[in-house]
Length: 221
Image (cartoon, rainbow, N blue to C red):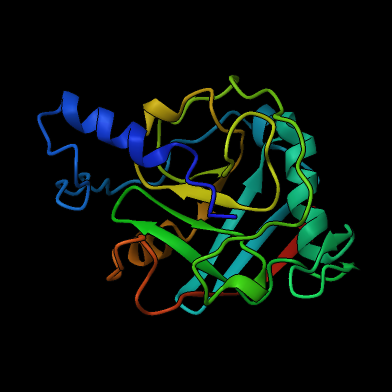
């Protein structure tokens, strides 16, 4: 099974056509202007939740807070992170219950646009992408817009195909509005995400130098 590209390259190509860019290659797109400010704040009623996450990578830490109105999606991420949820080990085909994200890699990067992670660890050095072995439905999929950097959303291969893969944005991505569940935002460490997005990559947008998600720590607030 290939990595969920969530129709991204086709949609980005469509956006490129509208901007007069070459629709065949998105690699030459001019970088999105960097903002010197933090992501726009979200009303507290929407971000307040019982937990937050620190994504520790070998490039630095990224702090994520979750949206309370995407509780099911955020809970799936948290349960996978701490090992509360059973998932299928793609190496053995057996159900396991251990932290899912620890030791995985960031497997897709697009400069100043996004980074993507959440393939199960056994696949981190291959072209094949795997998830936790289950899928679940979208949650309030059209309630938020990709209108700022630092949003955390589920990567999927179509409606109701969420699993364990996620992406973090570095620019507004309006062509993705209504297509992916946004369940949190970066509270600290957006510069780490941007640095990762700018690493050298291959033709499949995989970093040439692996970026490991060493651990996801969950804080219950």
